[in-house]
Length: 448
Image 1 (cartoon, rainbow, N blue to C red):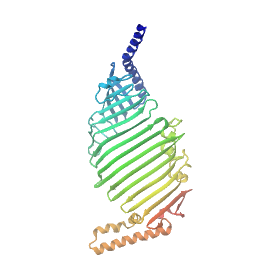
Image 2: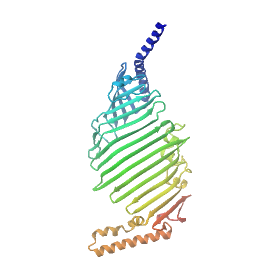
Image 3: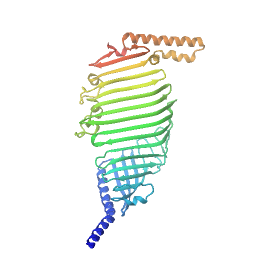
């Protein structure tokens, strides 16, 4: 009996000792198969530079090339793989927390060559530190960190450009079963300079979620602050923004998808335009899933062009567009329905207007409406700079105010505007080629 038990223990001990090496062998075979499958894409080429298989640990190096007409982007990844089934070798690796898993991967990824259209000869970048854990359910948890760096490049017809970024990190999870992924990327800040632009962004982060099989995805970007200058010809404008958030999301129901776009900013200024507490909320319903590359239909050379495919049958909801400008508050909402648009018709103005059904509601404070009407007195506003006396300047201001009031009374009389206390409102409807504003049919929209 004792010999029998000892025999069983010996077999178990051999299995335990051999299992890491077996997992390493299976891993190499599986990686080779996955790489061969990935290389079926014409723009992607993954080449195994070396693979040294060990008992508890293997070392692999791969060269990943993204081939494009403007050139190739080349990344070399060097990874140490701690294999299990319980990778106890990870216990002796600095910075790795032991968790029950099949594999733990740790290494560097170095961008050796970057090719982007119009960009030439970037310098080498510091390596990206990688850490990944492969669990028994084939879920991969990943982390990465970067010490920050500088990328210098040139573009045709412009001065050389430099982009600096501070230390950053990423984390997330990836399912090997269905390709679902979620994660976050962040950096302390990004600076960009060229001959026309000088921008500094602080605390930049991106959160993402993707479910390829269901055509579901979400991307949320945040910037704590943005400051700098932008040059247009000989004019240099200052730009600044605080607490910027942009959220875009796609969800699918059956063979159609819905898209959601949200954006908020606590403060924004460019030249003489100033905005505080700005917000936008837009929904697009009824996008054919096939137009997004999903669904049951396979795209062909004769498929409907993407822009037309997205528009045909879609409904756009402007849930909110609001902001507090220096001259007053603005609030806009509305909808545009293109479900009557033939997806096979040419994407031209006439069929789009024929199919369009829509409405909009615009509410603005009185000073903001007056500011918007200042274009009608633009020449006299320019003369204010050259007024030779206070009396002449006061007369010009009164003339400008009279012009604005005259145009305002005209818009009220023709029905384009409706007074509501110290605000003005426009309720707009459009259907069958007929424009209606505040209940009044507008025969000549260009006459405003």
